[in-house]
Length: 262
Ligand SMILES: O=C[C@H](O)COP(=O)(O)O
Image 1: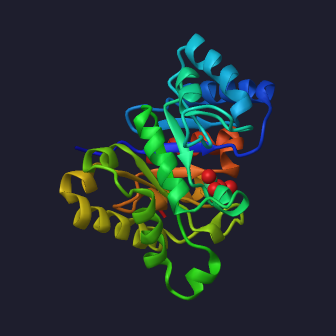
Image 2: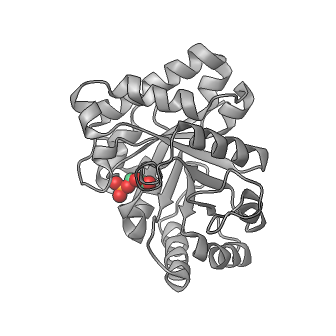
């Protein structure tokens, strides 16, 4: 079965709930105006927790063809975990997706493979689709260990999951050195690692799983480079940071299929 391209805009810690409504409205209008074909790419916004209720109200009320998700979740069901947000809370807010193991969570909140694995399992258990982030830093890339290192992240994040569960989730390869730096990996660099992830899935979880799992690339994706990235055989979409805050850029990314590939 063909994998449907996914363009996910991770707003990170940007936009309050009023600004969020403005951006989502403008994004929906722009996609409609530019005749975006929802069959050709699924468009997802990933705002801060505090925006989710407003985004839900707008998307449900206006029946917009946009999905949304959260940037993190607790691995626990509920209880005395000050500051954390449970999967049930996100489900109640209508979230479809949740980002897990973003490099900024790994860096600033010391999340390791075990935590990422626990959050991935919790998301799946509660019916959310995890977007599991993996990828190497600059030192690892310079030492040419990027493939092995990233496969280590994949192995850790997906431990104990069934083939079926893995086929239904999303993996985002984000080389840390390319995040928010303007330093985009070449399409060939991105394909090298995304292809290695798919090979690993094929070897360990079989053809059906490897062919079903969507693998995104993230790191300085813009409308001007998304076409070449999407032309790679193992890249099924993008996890977009900065450019997802600019409506025209993000709408252009969503409409990658009408852009030049080089
Ligand atoms: O989650 C998104 C990524 O970290 C990429 O961010 P960026 O597009 O600003 O480089």
